[in-house]
Structures are given as structure tokens and as C-alpha cells.
Length: 217
Ligand code: SAM
Image (cartoon, rainbow, N blue to C red; front, side, top):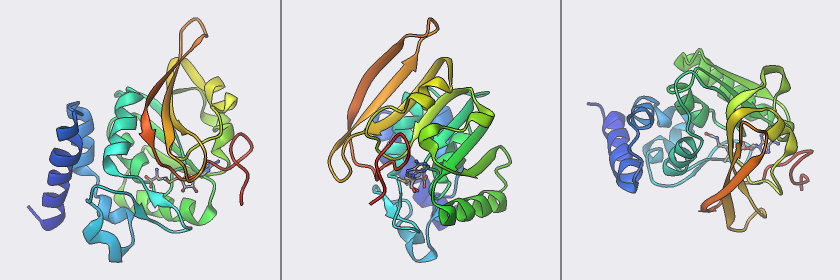
């Protein structure tokens, strides 16, 4: 085992499985995606720590456990067609792609979208597409989705994201003020069209900026 494989295995056991996430598909996905390849070279040694890390454009790559928690809550399954809003480094999209059939990762910052796209291509994750744009209005071209994750905290649940869910689809996203403790929320679009919402616990994310989110600056 090389150094990073060992660190990754420890991350899966101590940070994810030890906190109660036991789905073998989720654990296997975190075992294979090289998180150190999604951060700056200078941060590679810290990539498997139990915390977020800075990436370009003053953004962050989320804590591994929180990514796992969101994947579990969204009940992502083999065959699923997925949208991730806030693709950032591309890491979460890469992990999801080891479970789902196809992942669209949308990122508003052109610099991050370009870097994530290059990284995903280099690593060979052929079922991930990184697009650039305001993900608060979703990505209509590939809708509907089995599940949508948003990796940035919104002011409210964006109606276009709910519209782009399939019947039975799940949306998991943080809601709350930038810089404050936010609430991770799950919205399920029931087969009769009604919505069920539940709260999953406190989190801290960067703001979701856009038409159906916060205003830049
Ligand atoms: N999932 C990412 C990863 O694995 O690296 C981490 C994402 S970071 C916590 C949140 C990202 O959301 C930032 O890159 C930010 O630019 C992006 N973002 C914020 N508002 C957005 C929007 N309306 N549409 C798309 N991306 C947005």
C-alpha cells in the first residue's frame, strides 16, 4: 500500500464508517477516489484529514464525512442520474460517479470549472460532466435527476431544483446564512408531487450565490 492509499483507508474507517455510514458502495467509492489529486500539491499531505481544505477561487473542498453524509441522505444508487451544484474541485462528483451512472457537476466559477474538468479527464471519470453556470437554476439540459446535491448553503430551496427532480427524487442541501451554522436539509419529491422536508443536522458551507441564492458580495 502506498502512503496515500493507507491515509485514504484510515479516512474511510475512522471518519466515515466509524460515524455510522456503512453502505459498502459509499465506502468503496471513497476508497478509490484519490482526494489528494483534488487539492493543491502543497496540501496533498493534508487531503485525508477530517476537515475541509482550501481550493482555488477562495472556495473549499468539503470534509470527507460531510460528503459521505450527503450521498447517504440522497440515497444515491447505481443507475442514478445525478446533479451536483457547486462542483468546486470535482471531488464529490468523482466520488458520486463511482456509485451513480452519470453525474453533472455545475460550478459558477470558471477557474474552478476548468480545473475540475481537467482533473476529471486526467483521472478518467468518463461518466462525470463538469459544466459552468448558476446551479441555483439547475441544469435543465440533462433534467430530470434522481438526486441533486448542493455543496453550498442557500437562502431557500431553489424551486428550479425541485422541478428538475424525478418523482421520488431527493435533494440534499444546506440552508442558512453565510458564515453562520446552517441546517442540512433533505427534500423528497413524492410520487404524487408533494414534498417532504427533513433536517439532517448543523453544517457550515460557503454561500450558494445566484438567481435563487445569495447575492455576490
Ligand atoms: N463539492 C466541491 C468539491 O468536492 O470540491 C466543494 C464545493 S465548495 C464547498 C462549494 C462550491 O459551490 C464553490 O466552488 C462555489 O464556487 C460553488 N457555488 C456557489 N454558488 C454556486 C452556484 N449558484 N452554482 C454553481 N456553483 C456554485
